[in-house]
Length: 320
Image 1 (cartoon, rainbow, N blue to C red):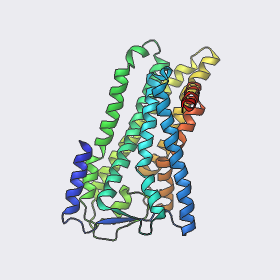
Image 2: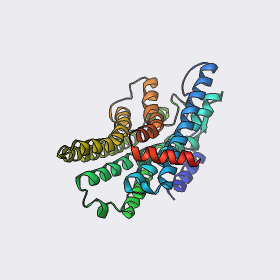
Image 3: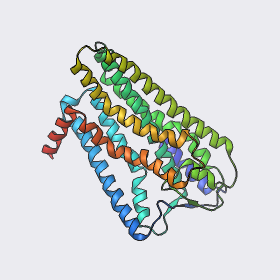
Image 4: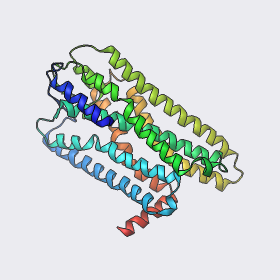
């Protein structure tokens, strides 16, 4: 429902007289044709590995009954989310590496912006409920089975998707209503807020302020919640008398914390700290880090630090 409303609104806006631009040019990464071919090969391999790695985690959780617990259900759905997240940017990037025009349609640009921001927001919410799950499992182990039931787990995951895709629906429509008279060249590999605002013919400080306030609130509040959960979790772990118990708890949470640091570190640098004056190359690298590198590393981080996941992955690979 949300997808169709946003798409219909963008089609209407594109057919109206508010904009004379019908397509944008994504410059992507500079370089000669040989460099473009090399980058195509590099990101193609990264994309394929990400899809296969996260897809294997999804199937491992689905096929191995030992992993039918809230922790691994969340991990499986998170891997599924990562597949869609990287797919919102990399396939179009790959096409542009081999294209001479490097164009993207007006509607396509804003749909990419909408899906990219919505999936990123959904990921931030997912990391919150994953930290909540770990908090309950370690700080309230006796009540964990009765609180974190499969029903609650699926309700929380569904809420992440719904609120993730609602968060930027209004901002996307507002941004697309701005007049774009030309030029239409975006010095980025995707359609993002700041590059699009820079191309608008008329200033729209309210739209930009609302977007950055919303982004900052989502990033900071979700990060504070995660940090608060892990502070309480750390206190509880330090009280565990056995060294083996503490090591197991830290090992379980270490992979999640690694993903949190990678993802939120790049988001803070991009959307909370002032990056408008930074060179376009720096903004591309930061965006690349949280949009491509994090989904790429996700299978490695979770499979290498988790014995149960290693066993399930071996089982899936034998089946295949």
